[in-house]
Amino acid sequence: MKTALLFMVLMVSQAFAMGGKGDGQKRGEHFKKELNLSDEQVEKFRELKKNRGEMKELKSKFKESKKAFREAMKKPASTPAELQSKFDAFMKLRDEFQRKRFAHMLEKRAILTPEQIVKFNEMKGKWREGKKGKKGKRSEW
Image (cartoon, rainbow, N blue to C red):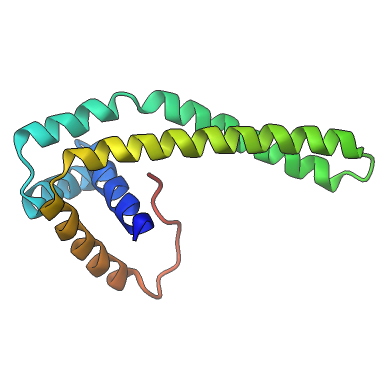
């Protein structure tokens, strides 16, 4: 249930984050209409979007660290100490990224009313039903 709520918040956020970019703008308008978001709520989502740079940078560092760890694991010459060091660095960045991501999701969730959260969960269920059988990446929050 918690995962579903977090996913919901991320979906709303993504819809607004993509505003002004063709289909993203249409999705943002769709979410605004379907969830009956106020202008104030829309503005709050836009304000949160401005702080995404730090998350993007942290995500990039996390991915680089993960790649470095995987590459080291492939090398027969990597020592246990090297592997442990790369693993620790990777896990530290992963944890930091996940904690900041969660905090950001909580901020987004706080913008919505309980009724909007319920409505979004319904929308998400219909969206997922339409996606069954289709392969592809799931959207990132």
